Amino acid sequence: MRLAKLMACVVALWGAAVSMSLAGPKQVLVHYMPWFVAEPYSSSWGWHWTMNYYNPNQTNSLGEREIASWYYPLIGPYDSADPVVLEYHVLLMKLAGIDGVVVDWYGMDNYNDYAINNERTAALFNYTRMAGLKFSLCYEDATIQAEIKGGFICSTCGVTHAQQTMLYVQSNYFADPSYLRWNTQPVFLNFGPQYFTTNSQWVSIFSPLSPGNFPAFFTEDNRLSVGAGAFDWPPMYLSQSNNGVLTLSTNALDGYLASFQQKASGWPGYVSSAFPRFHDIYAQAGVGPSYGYLADDNGAIMQYTLNLAMSNGSPLIQVVTWNDFGEGTIVEPTVDYGYRDLGTIQNYRRQYLDPAFSYDTNDLTLAYQVYTMRRAYAGKAVVNSELNQIFTNIVSSNLSTGALRLSALESGRPVIYNPALSGGQLQFGVGGYVSGSGVRVQTSTNLLAAGWQTLQTLSASTNPISFSTTVPSQSTVTFYRLQNAGP
Image (cartoon, rainbow, N blue to C red; front, side):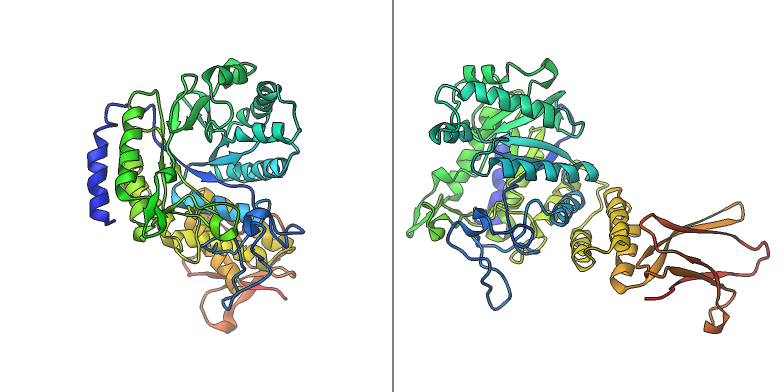
C-alpha cells in the first residue's frame, strides 16, 4: 500500500463527512492500557508482558527483555502504577499535541485484575490532571459477563451491578473537572457492547445518574439510540488469508472506513480513530488465534487514518492505541519506530488544528531526559524537586527553561534561569544540579578567573531557589555565575 494511494482515499472519503458541523475544536485523545505489571516496581511480571509464555527476566544480546510483543518500549517494559512512567507518558502526550486519554476500563470490582487496573487508572489520572490533559473511560461491559460466569455476581444481577458501576464512575471520574465532556456531557465509550447489547439495557444502566452526568455515549462501530454515536476501530475481523497470513487488505480497510463515515454522517457525533498498524502476538504466545495483520507500511497507515480523522466532521479523535503492545498498535516511542508516530500527530495537529503548534520530535526527547534523570537520582529529594519544577516548565509550554535546567542537571552543574531586572534589583532562579553544600553566587567585572567574588551561598532546598541583589548604579558591566559549594 503506497502513501499516494492512501491520500487519494482520504479525498474520496472526505465527502461522506462534510455535512456534520463541529460542536467545537477537535480533541485528540489516545486509547490507553493501564494493565501492565512489572518488576522491580511490583513483585512479579504481569500477564500482559508474559502471556504465560514469555519470560522478561531473560534478555537478548541487546539487553532487551523477552516480552509478549513484536515491539519494544523505548524505556523497556514497565509498571503502569510507576509514577516515573506515568510522568514520562503524560509529558510525551503534552509534547505530541495530544489533548487527553481514553483509558480501557474494566470496572472497580475486586475480580481478576479489574481492581488493580482501576488503581492504575486513578494513578494515571493524577498525572493527566497535573499535565492539563483531559481523561475519559472506555468501559469493557464484557466484564459483567465474566463476573456472572465466575460466580462473582448472580446471573440476574447484571444490569443492577452495572448501575452501581456507573454510580462509582459518576462519583470518582465524571465529577472531576478534568473529565472530558462533549456538549456538556461526560464522554463515555464502550468497547462493544459485548454483553448489554440492547438499547433498553443501557437506558436502565444510566438511569441512576444525575441529569448533568448522563453521558455522551459512544459504542464501537454502531450507535445505540441512547448514545451520541460510535467510534471505529481496526476492523481485523475483515482479514483474509494472503499467502497463508491473515491480513487486512487495503480494499477491506477502505470499505470499512467509508461505511463508518457514511453511518456517522447521520449521528449527533462520532469518534474517528487513527492507528499505525495491527500486529498481535496472540498466536505466538499460545493464547488464541491471531486477529490478523495490518502492515505499518513505513508510517503510511498512521498518516492515512490520522489525516482522515483530522479532516472529517468528528469532534473527537481517538489514536488507537498508546500502548497495546500485545496487539502492536502502539504510538508510544519504541526501539522499533522511535518517536515517529508522535511526530506524525504533531505534524497533523499543526496542519489541521493549530498552525501555531511549534513542537517537533526533538522536543519529545525532553520526556525521556526527565525519565532518565528520575531513575538516576531516585531518592535524591533536592534533585527530584528540581525535576518537579522542570515538569511544570514543560507542561506550561516553557520548554526553553525546562530544557536549560535539564541540560544543567545532566551535566552536574547549576544554572541561572529567568533573569529579571527591575528598579535596580536583579533577580534570577537557580536550577540544574545543586550540591548538598549549596551553590555559590559569584560576581565579577571581568571574566578572568581571579576576579570572581562570592556574594552569597544559597542552601540546597526542595523549594525553588532564587537570588536577588541590588545592581550597582554605575555603568560598569557586572557578570554573575554559579558554582557548586561542595560535593
